[in-house]
Amino acid sequence: MKVKSIISKSIMALLAVFALTACGDNVDYEYSNYHCNLTIDNAVHLDATLASAMNALSPGVFTTIKPLYKDGTNYFYFKNNQGMESEKRFNAIDDKLQSHLRIGMNGGLIVGFGNLDTPARFFAYDLQCPNCFDLNAPPLRSYELTVSGTGIAACKTCKRTYNLNTGGNIVSGEKGKTMTRYRASTAGPNGLLRVY
Image (tube, rainbow, N blue to C red; front, side, top):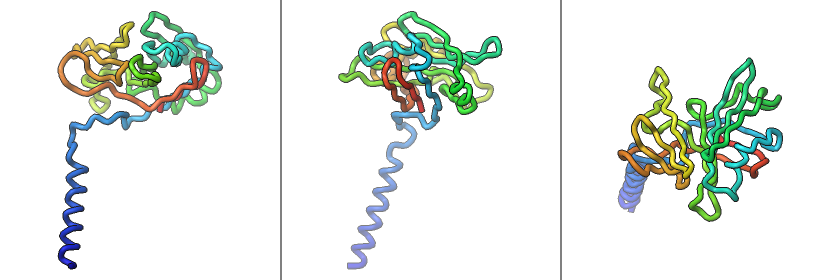
């Protein structure tokens, strides 16, 4: 009886090891293990470009968020895929949080509601191409994606395109990684945006 118990426990342990290693390096995790730290209170900023991406009633609108420093002052720069763009100066809370601010791996995010799910799903993506950009390869080179009016992000270097409406999957080009996604929440167009 003891032998059967030992064999059974050994088999279970081996199965657990195989289950943990079966996926190998080909796992495509839903969210990045690199964590952003961005909170924008649009009830204070009242930015229409940012609000357009935080509105569940207008899915398919995606806004790029980047930090901008000019004339000795910090700003948020917003540009959506419908042609709107704006800048909002950091307020006192933004300035206080700036030392902990992380807007993507290389200073940029894309946020918005996808237009293919009901209810619409809110997404936050890194602005860098996941197949060209490497955070661990100095010197750091930027491979920013451009976003079309239909919610397709394109990389001019590798020529891959990604669908922002469906989680950032590759829609054309060679096989590779899907877009880098972050956990995010929004409290509506003039509410709080958090990307973490």
